[in-house]
Image 1 (cartoon, rainbow, N blue to C red):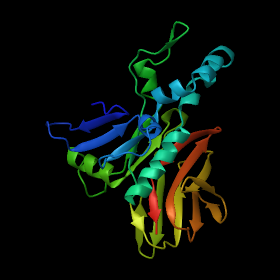
Image 2: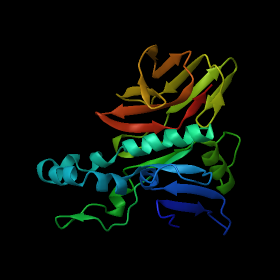
Image 3: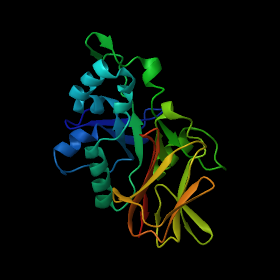
Amino acid sequence: GDKQCGSALRASLKDPERNLELYGHIEKYAERGSGDYDRWDGIELVSFHANARSRLSSLLGKLITDPTDFYPMLTRPTKTNLEHWLWRAKQEDRPIPIFAAPDAHQNMGILGMQTDPYEFIFKMVSTHIWIDKDESLNQESIFRAIKKGRTYIAFDYLGDPTGFQFHAVVPGTKFYTGDTVSQPIYIVVRVPPGECKVKFFCDNQPVNRGAFFSEGRDWIVDPQPGFWRVEIWRDGKPWIISGQILVK
């Protein structure tokens, strides 16, 4: 339902209970300032609809000059959403789970051309969820994983993200997205096969010092306190966006 400055999705796959509360169009919420809010189970970090509205003039130009780059212009989080994501995380002192939304209605058109056919848009982006190995795949385990922050966003048109991992390490224990960890010895990302570039961020600031690469892995030793995340880029475009790990 509408909350005047965004959209609240209270989901259940099999019953009328509100077992999962997700919040979309957070760019609208951010424009209205901090305000009061409920504690949400996840926020929409990527929305094609919001990206299209914010870049309409550029999209029109691309449609005329280079149509092949029209859709890739939509496949990234907006600066406003990234900033609001971090703001909420700091306010609540916890990693905030994320999801992506193609927001496909098959009703967008430019110059008489339909730009969002369902069969195409749904292949562009998805939210991937990590389920613990000992859990069955059902509504309860899916919702539990989302609430724990075990999600990442992938722009699947650039390739299959299977194999992606991101975690912090203390001796004998791994901490994953959605977790808070004190003084880990390093943060490591495992990338899927193929050419790609790894970008680490702490509190949304790029971190390059002390990064290593070996056998499909990158890592940073003795990471500083803050909200850590990683982006994997392919062909000059964002491919995978991780959730947050809070380092204390």
